[in-house]
Every structure is written in C-alpha cells, then in structure tokens.
Length: 201
Ligand SMILES: Cc1cc2nc3c(=O)[nH]c(=O)nc-3n(C[C@H](O)[C@H](O)[C@H](O)COP(=O)(O)O)c2cc1C
Image (cartoon, rainbow, N blue to C red; front, side, top):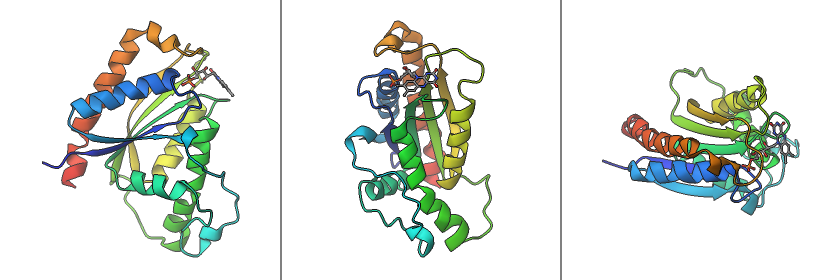
C-alpha cells in the first residue's frame, strides 16, 4: 500500500518551543505509523505577507513569487497536514498567519475563478492541529480555531483532531508534562492510520 503523505508545518518562531516539541513527537508517531512526513519550518522560509493586490483574480495564482508556491504545492499534494502554532493574541502566530493569508489566492481560485458547487462533506485532506497558550481562560482557543476552520475550508481539509494545551509559556514548559508529549506521539500515529482512507481516495 502507498504510504500516506503528511506535511508537518512548524508555525512558531521558536525552533524548540512548546509547539515544536509537540509537533516533533507527532511527526515521530506518524512515521512510526507508516506515513511519509515532510517537515516545513515557517521561520526558515521567505514568505511575504499578502499584499492584497489581487493579482490572483485572473487565474487564482499569487503574483508574489517566494517560498509560498512550493509550500502550497507540498500541502496540496499531501493527504494530511499537521500544523502547530502558539496562540499569539488569540490567534495563530504571525508566521502561520502569513501562510494562511497567502492561501487567499486559492480562495479566489475556488470561489471567484472557478466557482462550482462543492460538497463540504467531501474533504480531500485531513488536518491535525496543535496549539499552545500561556493562559488558562475558557476562550483561549476560540479565535485560533475560527481562523483554522476557514483556512481548512480553503484547502479542502477536515479537522481530524486538535490538541490544545493551556498554561505553557516558557521554552521547555511542555517537557514538564510527559502526558502531553505522549498524547502528541499517539495522535501522530493514529493520524497516519486515519489517512489510509484518503490514500485509497
Ligand atoms: C507575541 C506573543 C503573543 C502571545 N499571545 C498570547 C495570548 O494571546 N494568549 C496566551 O495565552 N498566550 C500568549 N502568548 C504566549 C505563548 O502562547 C506561549 O508562550 C506559548 O507557549 C509559546 O509557544 P511556543 O513555545 O511553541 O512558541 C503570546 C506570546 C507572544 C510572544
């Protein structure tokens, strides 16, 4: 059987911060579960924020040429995305938001350039989302999950699972919670299995 293809996107500016540690574990789990995983660290990429020039209005192609195109192509060629971001001002990090905003070109393609009825139940891809915030409020993840929902819609992705952790702030804080690390590993492994249906198409 063909191995499920997963793209793991590190959205924090910290290389070894809390979300990165959890995502590394999920990657390990997914590989042990039989998936092929490509890792992308957003802070290492050259990616401009969306400049809202709507060069994408003609053919749905972003006019800004940088690392967005290869990142987009990787994600669209995958069966699953594992995305990890810290909560920054109740939404995703700036690195993650830049990636999401650049996908506006795909939104334009989907809804303006090539509009046709689509069945929202027929998501082509699945997503595992990991988020971490320092505080403990009930609404900590409301904003980030809303941004994620609309981003996933653009890339025909169904949210398979969200791992959301409160009360983690300094680099290394997550290491005090081995149960979180184990959960991320297990989720990665289960995610690889869950993608088998997507591989079969
Ligand atoms: C710019 C910035 C904004 C932040 N905004 C929030 C916030 O709105 N709510 C919160 O609970 N924590 C907030 N934090 C704390 C981070 O979410 C927290 O430190 C997290 O553990 C960082 O994850 P990382 O190590 O993966 O980068 C913020 C941190 C920074 C640097």
